[in-house]
Structures are given as structure tokens and as C-alpha cells.
Length: 94
Image (cartoon, rainbow, N blue to C red; front, side, top):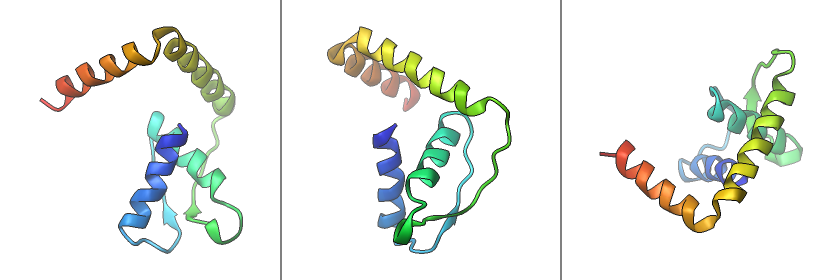
């Protein structure tokens, strides 16, 4: 998640977007948008103009899912995870 949030910030930097943006995301993208907005809301880093979130229990659901994914990744091990990513990317990008 931290890498995805950093990637989003890097993309905005690379595109030279210096004004606050509107972010829309769904599923994992929604989690990235929310975490990015939360992590950049202080001081000069305020990069997200507005957003709306009003789904009861959503934050708890996402936190539980992130923990579940972290456990699965830990069980897979780094080498197996990288192999899975390569196989998946080859399938998705074919």
C-alpha cells in the first residue's frame, strides 16, 4: 500500500500537477485514494481537493482485508510472490 501511495504522489509530481486534485477509486484504487488523501492532508502537502466516503464499516473492512492480504503475502514468501506477480503481469499484459 505504501508503494502505491508513493507511486500516486510520484505520478502527480511527474505530471507537474501542483494543485489539489479530485481522486476517485474503486476497490484497491479507492483504498489508495483514501490513504493518499489522509497521508497528504497536513500543511503544504494538501494534494486532494475533495472526496466523499460514507459507507458504514468500510474502514474496518479494508483494515481487515489488508491484514488478510499481508498474512497471505507473508506465507507465500518473497520469491513466490515475485513469481506470481511476473506470471500475472504476463497474463494481464498479453
